[in-house]
View (cartoon, rainbow, N blue to C red):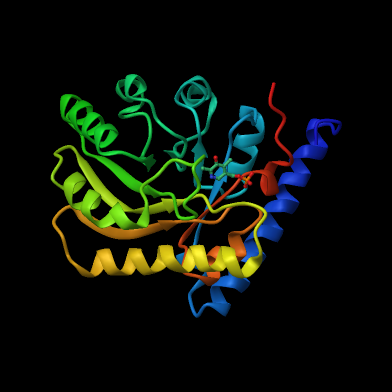
Amino acid sequence: MEWLSDEQRFSAIEENLKIIRENIASAAIKSGRDPNDVNLMAVTKTVESRFINHAIENGINLIGENKVQELLTKRPELKLDDCKAHLIGHLQSNKVKKIIGAVDMIQSVDSVSIAKEIGKRSLEAGITTEILLEVNAGSEESKFGFSFDELFEKSCEIAEIKGISIEGLMCVAPICEKEAEIRNVFSNMYGMFIDIGAKNIDNIHMSVLSMGMSGDYKEAILEGSNLVRVGSAVFGTRIYR
Ligand SMILES: *Cc1c(COP(=O)(O)O)cnc(C)c1O
């Protein structure tokens, strides 16, 4: 949408949000749930603050950023009084200290060691940080996250760490797959989410199942997602500078 004026982009964002909310509602109803049970996160990587604030003014109450530095740079410009911010991108341990206290949740916890660092820095700051465990649900070599095979064992190990609270699971599904295959990935995620939650382990609350992006959020909701992370369908195609 780079060739559009700001005014045109503002109204495109409003239109997009309307369509996405309708799609979320119909997928939720189709899966037998209340549309309000599915949270819409606007993914704001590469998006300038004025457009993010416009989405917030139009009802967005959750945003996601991939990079620590980008989030910290934009944060003072954002109207976050009634809007939460989550980190959703891979986190390096030397950046943990900076991000603690600056986000409401870290969705992209993909190793025991990063969880330990988050716990340590949270304790130093006197807070508990909510986290999701990232799952490499499509078993792709290029992707971060725990495999399904190790997920339960690692969850238990991470649950022992002080200063963090496990709130659920997150995944990025493989792209360019057939709908049935993607739905199978989401369905496996939902199975793990329910199984681990049913074990009632201390410090593991399976309340958030974060899956679904612009291309696959409807399928994700049909399989049980309660948090979809939508970027380009809200703000237009990303331009990396
Ligand atoms: C970029 C990103 C999204 C949003 O992607 P779109 O396809 O633009 O909706 C969601 N989740 C993560 C982890 C991302 O990096």
